[in-house]
Amino acid sequence: MNMYVSNLSFHTDSDALKDLFVPFGNVTSAKVITDRESGQSRGFGFVEMDVADEGQAAMKSLNNKEIEGRALSVSIAKEKVFRG
Image 1 (cartoon, rainbow, N blue to C red):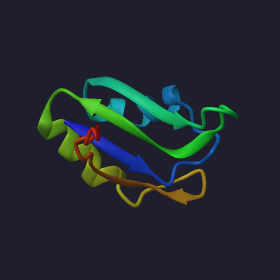
Image 2 (image 1 turned 45 degrees about the horizontal axis):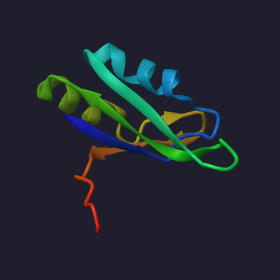
Image 3 (image 1 turned 60 degrees about the vertical axis):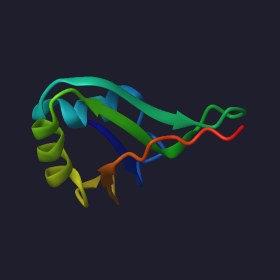
């Protein structure tokens, strides 16, 4: 299950994002998206978990949870559409 996580603190890195989801199960990947030029966080990222039930539990528990003064938004990620 691939999840989109937004409203992250700009201090949150990929390891910290992963640490938020690990208590719910196996995290196969966690990535905070950064600006190409500055390297600064853009305030959102993606987390992938291999068991859908664990992902659902994480989403339910972490959506709207306040982390570093910001209420996270966690939802199922939409598939990327390639334009070309």
